[in-house]
Figure 1 (cartoon, rainbow, N blue to C red):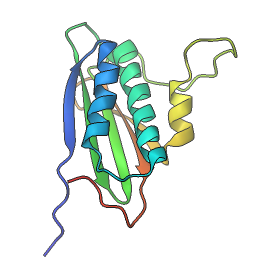
Figure 2 (figure 1 turned 90 degrees about the vertical axis):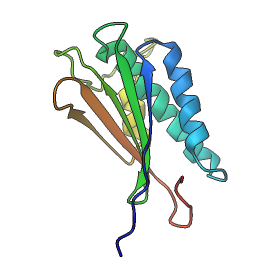
Figure 3 (figure 1 turned 180 degrees about the vertical axis):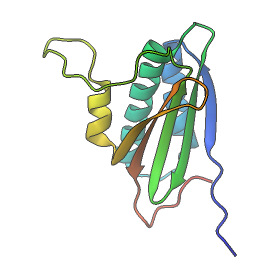
Figure 4 (figure 1 turned 90 degrees about the horizontal axis):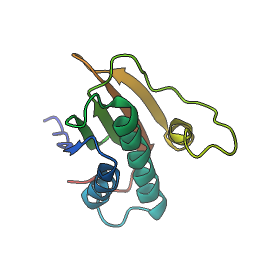
Length: 142
């Protein structure tokens, strides 16, 4: 009999800066107890960076929603953050000046994620998917 996959945890948040903290909290609550602190921290950082980018650059109007999905698969926790897209800006890592106060989000994602990719949505918008490995002896969330 095939193994039944885990059902992903998913949320929708308003495209508003306050949603970043709410998204990070939702992911932290969805994770099982006993994960290494570094994994929790890295998933929180990924969540913050990806949701921030979706709110800042992906929302077309203040009424848009940002979708966040978390699921375990293939030895990784995967995060997908999707926005409605503004049609002309694809997320691109940048190299900001040393004194810049922003612009490092995708550089951080690239540094801590085992894998990540930008995927267009079928109708409009963008999804950024990133994965972090968990140890084989850890149980994924149920």
